[in-house]
Length: 254
Ligand code: ADP
Ligand code: MG
Image 1 (cartoon, rainbow, N blue to C red):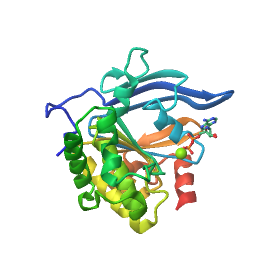
Image 2 (image 1 turned 180 degrees about the vertical axis):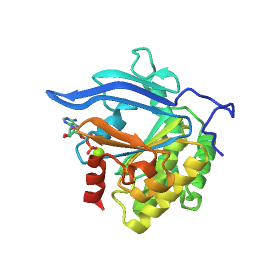
Image 3 (image 1 turned 120 degrees about the horizontal axis):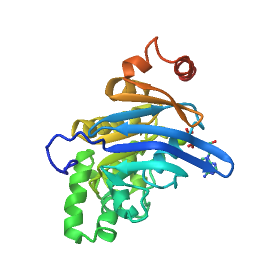
């Protein structure tokens, strides 16, 4: 088993603490001052119209995008500080994309162990043990030697999740992880995400899987035009008292 938290001691410091985050592309301000705290073991779900900045926001959280202004603390570490080791932080902030981005010429296990060997310098045997444990967690131990083309989309996405959790992230970011999948394949990915949450992983999820948001999110954040319009518990955001923009959005997509 892979530990997701260093100890059982209760901590009150947020896992993610994002303040006044701004991102501009040229003259276009895509994130207009976003504040978000994510508690240890919390699952925060981000919804909002296409183009509202959800992906850019997630990408800033592991500096795949360079924020223009504001601050991001991950487990107490200043992500934007010039002395912060960004490669170390990227292992701490795992990310799963809509496109699985697996290497086609490597087996599932090869994909999962690559960074363990090349970045963390683990021996082949050690990397294999960690990789197999990660594949076990996503229910794919028996597919370890399969190549991506021999796996379904849902299985490929679970390999991508295994690849991230093998690095023992503090927090996992998911950007529309099931959008490329047929509904029956999406279910297996959502089940793995649910297991991760139940094991104590801190997660930020951008997705249109509203049922998952309703059932499994601790908090839902609605973004529009680069700002947080409303946030709260799922029952509130999906209920009759939600902000009119949220209700309009939910009516549109369902
Ligand atoms: P969402 O994920 O909510 O659909 P995105 O974060 O992908 O939104 O995009 C938000 C806005 O930022 C869009 O208008 C998009 O065109 C713009 N954008 C995203 N990435 C870039 C980029 N690399 N260069 C210029 N504009 C970008
Ligand atoms: Mg997006």
